[in-house]
Amino acid sequence: MQHFQELKRRVLERYRQDYPYFQGDWKSFSSQDILNLIALLEKECKETVSEKWIYTHLKPETNTKLPRKNMLHVLCRFVGVSSWDEFIFEPDTAQHTVASSVVVSRSKRGYAWLIGIGVLLLLLIVTYFLWTKEKEANIPSVKLQNQYTKETVDSSEVQVYDATNTTAVKPMTQQQFEDKVRENPLTVLVKSPFYKDTIVQIPPSSSVQTPPVVALQPDDYAMMVKAFLKADITDWQKRKTQLKQILSEELEVIVMLKDGLGAEFYNKAQFVQKLTIPTPVLKRWEIVDIKNEPDGRLKAIRIKQE
Image (cartoon, rainbow, N blue to C red; front, top):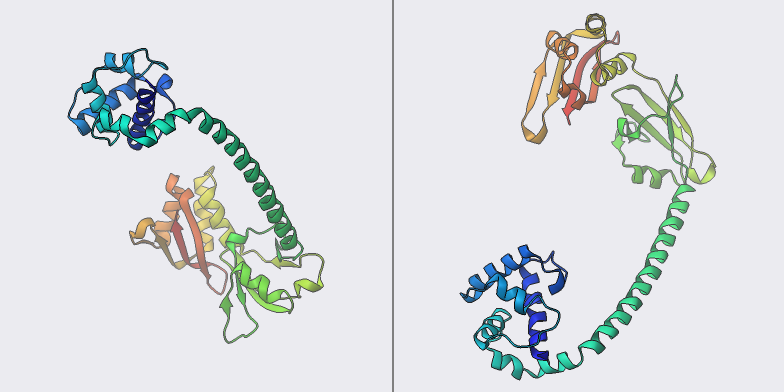
C-alpha cells in the first residue's frame, strides 16, 4: 500500500506536466481533471479507465486494498515505469515512501528558511533602490514652464538639443543631458511643436540647489489645433472659422498611420473638414511637428496616429 501511495503521487506529478496550473492533490482533483486524466491515459497508454475507477482508487486519501494488477501496470507505464513489478523493485521508491514524512517536515523548514532569506534580500534591494533615487533626486533637472500660465510643460512634448557647437546641434537623451551638465555649463536648444524654439544656457547641476527654470513661449496657433484635436465640439461653425484664420492656404498635413500602413495627406479644406466633424480617430492623433509661415499661420503639420 505504501508503494501504491507513491505511485499515486507520481501520477499527479505526471499529470502536472500536461496541466501545470493544477497544483492540488487527489482531494482537490476535480471532475474536469478526471476527464483530462482519462484522456491522457488513453493517449499515452492506449488504455481506458472509468471515472468510477478513479473515484474508487485514486481520489481517496487512504486505500484499504490495491487495484487489479493490470491497472497498476497502466499507471506505472503512465509515469515511465514498465510494470508494477519494476515499480515496487525500485530502491528509490521504497526509500522515498519510508522517508516521506521526514522530507515533508524538512521541506517546510527549508521553505521557511528560504522565505526569510528572500524577505531580507527584498529589504536590501528596496533600501538600495531608495538610496539610489535619493542620490538622483539631489541632481537638479531643468524645469520647463509655459511662459504665460507658469504651468509645467510635459517633457514628452519637447526635445532638448546640445547647442554648445552651433554648427553641429545634436539631440540628447535625458541621461546624456544630466551627464553633460553635471560639472559644466551647457547651452541647449529646446524644441517643441507647441512652443517657440528656445536657446538657454544651463548652469552646472553641482553648483545649484534648485532646478533652473526654462520659460517656453507657446505657439498660440499650434496650441489651438492641439485643443481642437482633443476637445469635444460645442460650436463647430466657430471652430471652422478659427481654423481658416490660423491655417495657411498652402497647408500640408501628413498623418502617419500605425503598423507601417503609410500616411494620409490633407490640404487646408480637407483638414478643416476633418477637425469639424467629431470622430473618435481625432483623439488618437498626436502632433509631432509644426512649421509656420512668417506671419505665424501653420503651413505644415505632421501627425502620428496612436
